[in-house]
Image 1 (cartoon, rainbow, N blue to C red):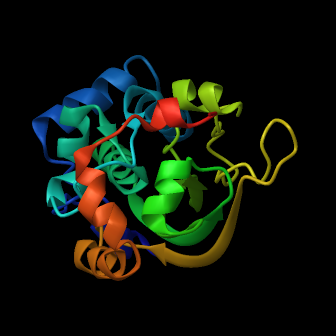
Image 2 (cartoon, rainbow, N blue to C red):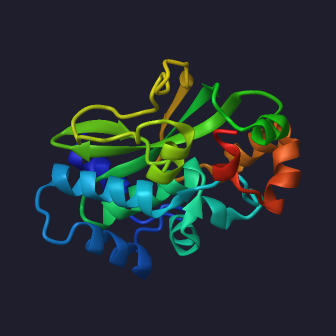
Length: 221
């Protein structure tokens, strides 16, 4: 992919709104005193992973749930919103970035979330792709450290070189997550396509997710 094409992964977008002043300030604070794209990418990953709590109980009909600046303001979000935020932060510091998506099977979820989604397959699960040293590298900032500790998982680290997706097994050797279909990377969050599938597949989550809940408390029960 050439430099001209990569310009679209540096520009602000509707959901990857890297021109938002609060997103820019958050990114600057995360990389203060750090030089080099790889080290800066790692710092931004850690800031989004642990600075924004993972929460799947959202009002998915609200586009803000998918928008970087709104996720930052709320200090909580699910995988798509957190991926958009990491991509936006990377773009503000000159690292081409894009949200990527995959369908996954998650074997370790809460009973309530499993009931709302009617199973363990989650479509449009999101990671972030960052262009570092000429290579696109995948990373997933979704599960924060506090949630991982509650679930008995080590937090997923990112070294800026190797793809960092979800652990296939938990700390006790149980299968955690499988990637079933990689949908690839996008210049912006494809909100309409995601919502069309969510409405069809997860009507219970759309209806009841906005009522909220405490996913962190549910995990590990």
